[in-house]
Image (cartoon, rainbow, N blue to C red):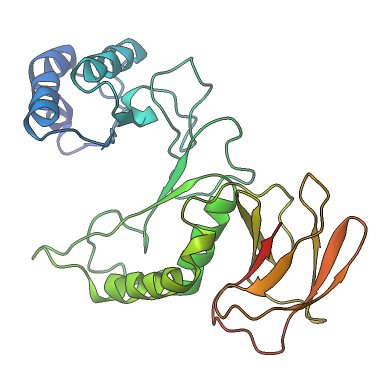
Length: 280
């Protein structure tokens, strides 16, 4: 739009460039477009903004746009890029200081998540958000699945980008990886959907996720001695049943005072990230 970024052509990403007509763009184009989206298509679940890094977009504009959206759809979820509350590519600076309901770290997974805030990592399947024919450096299925587990284990959501070609087709490498992820989730989805952050530090061999009183241990790389030491949950009670999620096979264990040692079989059922289910 001529009153937004188009005025900077060909330097679309020049973060020092300024356009005095930008406030007109927000009031006379952006808001009417938002009104059309938010009143013409029924109840929407989420609104994902981007481009808040533009110099002329202010935090006052962000708060105003956030409140405007709320008048049209009070229950919609709005990401933090409606305002200028990102630290670099990170999530929200501090809840309450900026508009937005959750953080959006980009191309990264925070080491400890973002405690006290909702967040999702938005990441690409290769290195490009759209379609670039020369970008053939695709992340492996293993990396994508372990990223998913890592993010959920830290309390986040995984927003995985798929960039269609100029013909509107999903690239074959994307399809292959998404199908493989779907196959893994058909078997192990119980440990992901509706799961919460791990109550424990991440172990060297994988990650934990938690759902109610059920703990899931995701084994990225089995230790050489094939044993996992897993602490008990807060109540200190021993786990009642410990099994492989993929097969339901009960595992041999040695229950201690504060945790349990789980003995893994020589052959695990999943090529990537076998899950051990521990019912409390």
